Length: 197
Image (cartoon, rainbow, N blue to C red; front, side, top):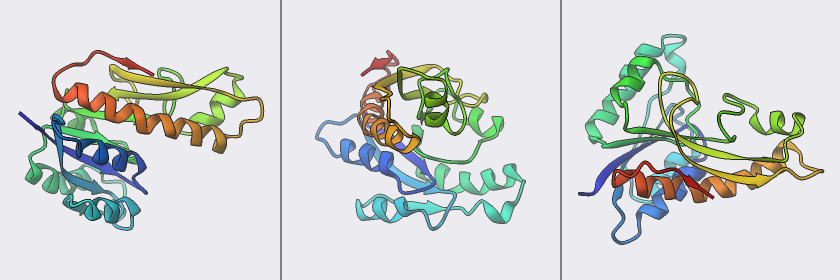
């Protein structure tokens, strides 16, 4: 049975687009039912709508620090779409344990480091500053602990001597666009075997 997928974004949605394009393939085990954002101006919403995917926006700003109220509003379009799988693709809000627990075992995230190294922000800058020989990205199950769930896939790139955070980020992003769709294909058929690219 084809799995229903909702994707949460905050910006331009390049990973979301990579996922949508992959799901267009004949026989794919998943299909998109919603792209939602915490920013009504997120560029990825128009891109998703252009692909024929329903979109929704719930602006987090009016809720201030009341994350529970924001998440309650965000849940409305998500639950209406009845997703089997929830994907975070550049969604820049930390979700509460209550929200995460609701989708336990069904929510994935892509993070731009080789977890467990460098959870959180500024991952490329931190990898360069540490003198790492390689960097990359990780797809993991989402748990209440930030960037800490079971790893479902990783892709690696070398850190070059003249790299800046921007040049490294650009090379890692290419691998993100390969890794996330590959992990989703497996995850949608119940295979949690990690993929290493």
